[in-house]
Image (cartoon, rainbow, N blue to C red; front, side):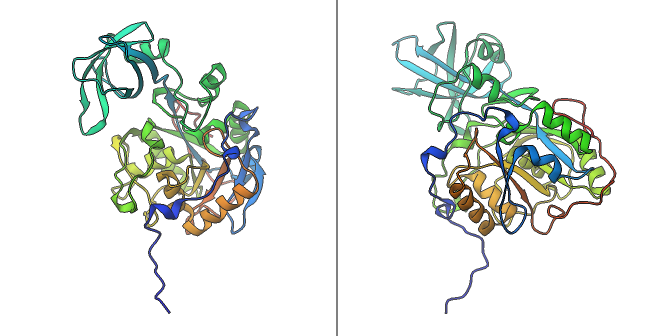
Length: 376
């Protein structure tokens, strides 16, 4: 009999699953909080509605939201010298009216190439994007955020088949988005509307915020066979002192920390890589796989993720590989809607405070007054 391995799955293929194309949500639910919610905290899945979320939390629990704002990062244009078509996806806005962007063209433009976007403004190719050879360094003639707001398009994920329209401009954005810089939405937070936030407040559930500007790399496939060989893309994040204080107050009162989305979780755990949660900002390339030592988050609210993706590996690390595999199998069989515009799942971390509820009447934490909803 062969020895039993205690190592978590090490191959990208272990995180593959069959997903019928019709389960990939092409449009959001009619109402933000009208999605389904798969409660995966227990041994067996429980099918719920997202509107039930407040009843699953206790007074003094803390929700941490990502207050990033999706920019209209997609531009269509042409090379000024040849008229050849060019499509740009701005990944990062830099000082001095410069950006890093993905470019699609018949031939890669060389440094010095002029580009005309939206028949409205010109940009110049400076070179490649430094350490990331897949990006191009461009110079815009004015503030990139203003030009994108006026001439860009909402950068819908590649698995959404229609062009972005006015409804996407509204719904592919959280109701509390505050800090522009993301090219993809923190999709677990798309389910929250004003009524849901009010219900959570009335229940005594607290809230705070972080910022993580989601990059296009979140949709990039993992092209290696072994997880250890993958190099994670880098994203800018910030965890403020007020959020650190809210987490500490929640812990002291016996409450639980619920990350709204994998981006909030990555920001919190990035700021705690030294062992304790500290205020921090900068770049993070944290790649969370099974065996990762979580230090902050007890509960995770997340959408369903792409097969073989780093986000699916993160979720498996958080709730357990076999458990998540079973939950995804149930989600497919029960016809849940997948990916950015799809349904949500609530997970607890085994061995943390994520499964039992804290005592009723636990003390309340306080959060920031900026960006995402805050306080209790």
